[in-house]
Length: 101
Image: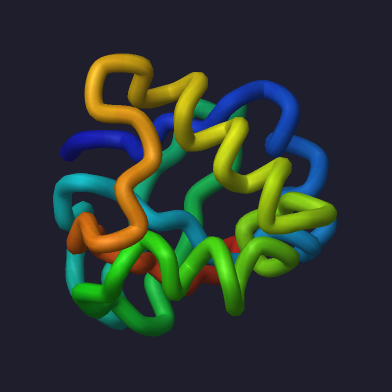
């Protein structure tokens, strides 16, 4: 099973339930699936998985993504995806999750 990797800066936010979604260029599962992460001992349960515009995530979901502003979200995205950068029209997979028991 493939684990969803998260930047170390988001590990604590995930464990305390502040970061509850992640958008990715690939789909990691379906709603209801329990998925491993790269955080020691932490698995997440996917609550919702859907295709969305990256710009909509930046505009409406940056807090749930663990960021304090749209600008911070865009900076994180560009750091992770230096080749393509941030394209608000790009379609991504939005994974809403909670830490699994």
